[in-house]
Image 1: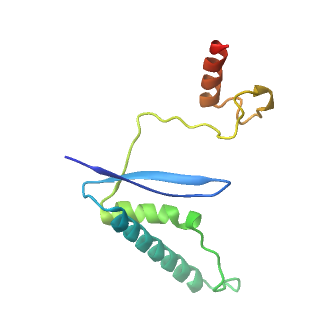
Image 2: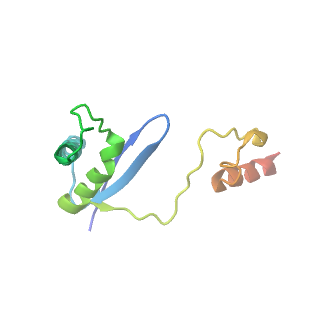
Length: 128
């Protein structure tokens, strides 16, 4: 059985999320974007309705709902109501993206134990 892969996520300068979903049906980019944007509108409306029904003096119509606030609900909707499935990866390689591979003295406690950076640095040191 052939499956097609679709990515959904968001980015910012501080963080990002990216999920790959699979489906037996082929969607064009426009079709998938239309479906995903419909799911965001649904998630926004549900969150707004839920918040507005709270007996809370702090609720205002100006409440901020960001893509990052709603992405989990959108992914769940795509999986539970539209037949998408999450892909299980056997392996992945991710590292902190800003580390200077030429200068390990500047690495902080978060990056000095980063498996990807450590492995790359070992291989670079062998080349010297």
